[in-house]
Amino acid sequence: MLKYIYQSLNKAIVILLSLNFFLSLYLISNIYDYRISFAKNEKLSLKKEDLQFKKDLLLKQLEEQKSQLTLRRVAVGRLNMTTPSSKNLVFIKKLGNTDE
Image (tube, rainbow, N blue to C red):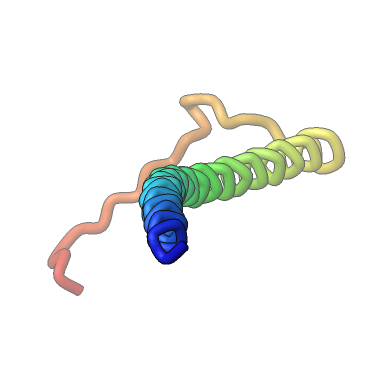
């Protein structure tokens, strides 16, 4: 009877140790997957920030172009302004000391 209890106890210990081993492997696998996912997430976050910066820069350039087109449209349409020809251009040259 005592021998049966020891055998049952040994089987239970072996089962628990085996279960502990496999659960440890599963935990290590999950931690590894988590670290890989976290690294990918960080790379994507950096790429997103870079793309957001480029997007903002492009939007700013688009704003400037729209405002320039609007100014040109108003200047030509409402104010009857024209682009100067080469004979209408005036160049100013400063003589003397250029440090002032």
